[in-house]
Length: 467
Image (cartoon, rainbow, N blue to C red; front, top):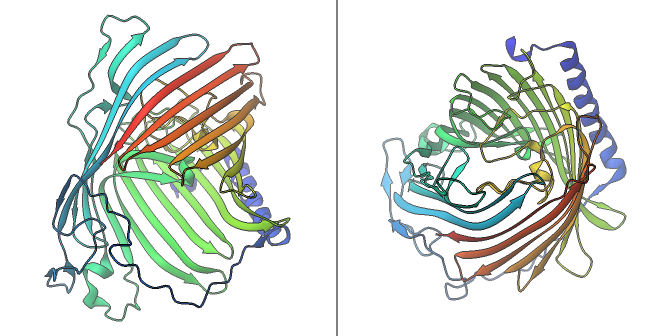
């Protein structure tokens, strides 16, 4: 099958991924012990409506309320036996930011804006249609004003009417309940068709928000002695495919098979994707996440191995490489603060299958120093590309005022394993403050340097409105 063809080098990469994964599974029980807790047998009284927190309603709400209380209406019974309670909700978020970014060569200061607006015709707990637009940004460009550098047209107008979300999702067993009244058959099959977001391997393999495609999911697969719940998804995407260079490949189609299951103490993901485009590529990833007790501490761990094979040639859109990524976090003693260490090793030039125009590179998951902000021309403090590099980020997330305020302090660095990759180091901080029920004020800043004494810095303030 063409889905599995590759070169000798690609076979070695897949073998390395498989060996690493087997080593993780084999060593896991000997190194860590699954955390356990004893549940109380005392019943907890049901909260009254007065005791529940006040609901924050969307601006437009027709039909049953979103997260409302009280009795459900009778609904509409379909000939299939399904009962739908139609509702229509409008919600979204608006981001506006003033930001300054100096990459060591060029300085940019700007006012940038982004609006993501969604309309949700809701039919039942499993069936809905989602429509979305982002009228202030398009293809990684955002409406606003450029203060620096001095340009002839500082006002940036990216107004558009492009639909960024338009998909229907549902489940066969819920639409046709008469097929299996006892819910014992094989009809727990979900589907989604239309323009939709894709996110796999925590965004390392796939992070794209506007893929036209169809996905079919078989849920609640039980493997005796191994898995209490496994889900398998097959996906075909035929349009709006953005490659690793964050640009659309109009010729590309995606074929993907994605598996996730609770296997013992771990949640395991095994994902494969083939992109047929201007330059074909194959991508494979394995990840394992678990919470365990190590030396008396509860540790959250996640280890992932991802490989990419350029089946035709290495380009900016796709290239050969392997990325090993690990996340480790724990709660600080005597507080609810979170301490974390994320580390990576990129061999050769790993490339993602799909990446959104404003998603940055595959290392964005490492921390705030590597992540793309997804708004304007403000770049990451440290490069989030995974070409011939090792690196890490160490940080602590502080919570205050009942988690209405938080502060993240982080230090990170990356070192090239080849002469073509520059060593970098940075320190950064992020502060967020909730204002009322719908607003969040955020401040980001960083300072960085590299082996060539090329210093860079950034500072930004943002107001996020959720409605």
